Length: 443
Image 1 (spheres, rainbow, N blue to C red):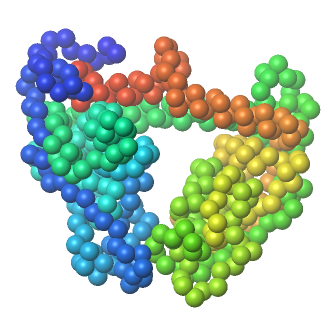
Image 2 (cartoon, rainbow, N blue to C red; image 1 turned 180 degrees about the horizontal axis):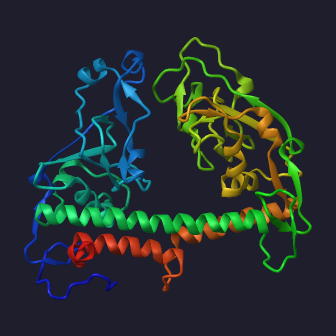
């Protein structure tokens, strides 16, 4: 990458393998020298008083899957916070995943509010005026592979970082004004690149679910203005003719805590998000309250959120796997599909595409701009293009293959999504090690 590279900046060896050379005027500091480092814990799930009516945000390791943590969905009481000696992590701290075999170990995110955390996270609270939180976050991103390597023993079974290892990590440290410039540049550029990736992914899915896989196929007018042309041999159907039932869930007063594996739980609204099902987004049913087994979620269910903001209402997902004892909540509809005519994953792809979203958002009703609803009758009347069932499955397989390539391949041309992702990582690494002149870019 040569864009913005300034060959006139004097460099020196950092003596850190993952860093290489850095500008001569930059320092190299251990994290513990410029920040407070610590981790949290999980209050006892057996003590309902620690969780019921809690007001203090409590975060688990899933939050580091995003660049910035802006809200919490779990809370503990002041009693739990005090008795369990949990840290109150300040806004502007950086959270780091420190345990687990998944990708969260070694990932980092900036916290934008005060919260406490569980034992799977470490917090880094940098000294004001010394380290910019966003620069630190991007530097940790560049150090991700190194963090993963030190968190595994020779057999690859350790699977954890310690707070001491995080505090001992050596990081590049430019002057604070330069840190801010680099962080602003990376925030802007990575948002642009992520937008390109999302745009390419969405275009791939939209074309597949509205035009099929063969670009030579003759097209015809669908007769539906917002849908446009579709392959000549496809039909268009209202959803009511492709489902056997639709029902709404139930929302009892659940406990604000994660459920145990052997107890009933109720889905949260965010269990259905962007075409994906998240079974861990659930609250425990209080002991003694009778569960409704008829609302238990099963593989093959198609879920639609019935109330949310205009941009999120009508979010959908097809349930591929589900833990036992998980109930449908009041804000989510469940559809039983006629699976000899309609593939659930195809339907999910269509309703998350711009074409599908257009009719969903046009049906949303409400007196508030912040919360709207859709009815069962709306859902039954939605149109969709309908290829033969075998072709639907072929389209689903094609989307899975091609989107996997978007996530994993590394190509040699800037016309590919893979290079955009590679370019993103290289951009961050180059910026936080001073290999590009971002001040020149901004000027």
